[in-house]
Image 1 (spheres, one colour):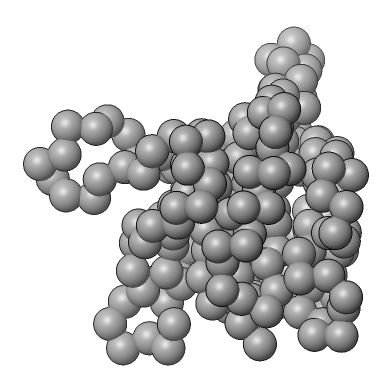
Image 2: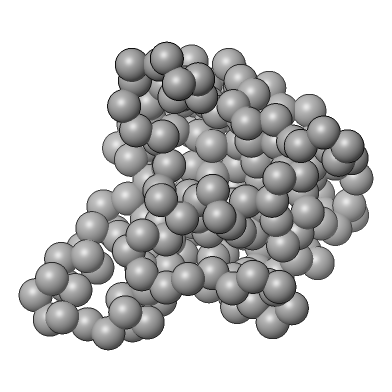
Length: 205
C-alpha cells in the first residue's frame, strides 16, 4: 500500500475555503492512504507566548505545543468530513479503513513512534511541525512527504535569490534521504504538487 504523509501548515487554517483547497490537493495525490499532520498555527503561538511569560521548561513547552497540534487536528477532522482521526501507526496504515484520508493525532502518534525510533525528535521551538513530519515520515518509511505551505517552494540551487529554506532548522536532520519531499503552495495552487527534494539514488521510493 502506498502511503503519503502531508504536513499541513498551521497558517493555512485561516483560509475560509481551506476544506475545498485541501481536498483538491488530496485528490491530486496518487496514494492508497493520505495522512495529514497539522501544524499548531495560532494555537501553538499561544503556547509560545505562555513560554515567554512563564519561562517553561523545554520539555513542558514542547509537549504543550504538540498538544496544540492535537487541537488543530480535531478542527481539521471537522472541516474534512470524509477524513478520520488516527492515533497510531496501525490505524494509519490499515487498508480496511473506509477513509482514504487520515488526520493524525500527534501526541499518541509521536509517543508510539518514539518507542522504537533510532533517532529521537529533539525538544524545543526549533523542532516545529516540519521537523515532526520529517521525523515521522522517516520512522514510518512512507512513500513520500508533501509539505503543504502558504509560500512558494524555495529553490535548491546556489544561484537562487530566494531567502530561507521554507522549513525549520531541524527538518534536514530528521528526514531520511530515502523519502522524497514534495511541495504545495495551498494558497496559490493546491492542485500543483512539485518535487522539492528527490530521494537519494538507489532508494526504493
